[in-house]
Length: 301
Image (cartoon, rainbow, N blue to C red; front, side, top):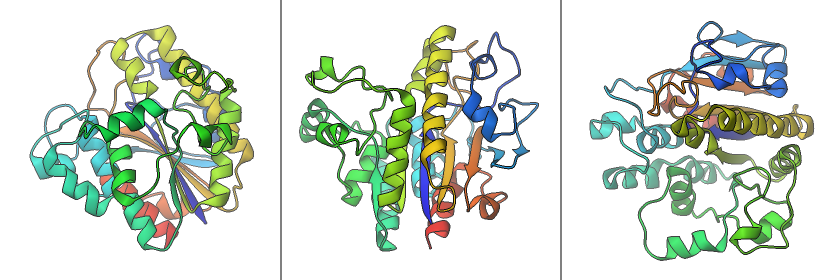
């Protein structure tokens, strides 16, 4: 068995109001197919279909205030209650006191300790590598965790070989970043490339952060586009992956895009979607963000 963890930044379970919630407004055929014909909202936050399980996951972790990316992602990718550890929600980057926690407990390190192969599927341009070499501490938990575990970050050459995925799913920005020879692809094609990585690795992580950006912008057309782009990508994954061997988990760190009436994060639960041979083992195992890493490790063990 292998595990594909797709992380969506800033996606919660909101009301069934198309004026506020682009998730119920967008055309999302791949997600609807997985979930038996529906998308998630407060009136439909738990579903079981022939293909997948949907359940709400607590993102507040017993701490007041609005959940943030730094602590929420640390909880997801370490299994440690990061906001409770430091006494508050914090983001977008983790605090210095969380760095040792991320280094010791991150999911990449623990997968490698099981003797398994792990890859962070996102690809990065040369500007990012120059940025990291400058000594910056302003890194997302995903990038930080991979680097701390010794999992190489993928570059433009990996993208050209279709051995990684662009964060925007289409590669549209790469020519303006100095890569004129990188042509655009459809989100579905990128999804097939992500599925290919699952054939060569035991654990694959992909991060899609445009959802959080769209939520902060409160731009309904852009939010719908970002969601529909992801749905086409998800369709490419589902069409190409080996469902007898690959368990897919989709999770978020906090709510945001599901309520465009506010530009801040929300305290809404976040959706967990699980499909594949591990779905029955995870149906009731994951109720908050700290349960993701232990679930991944349990599947791979």
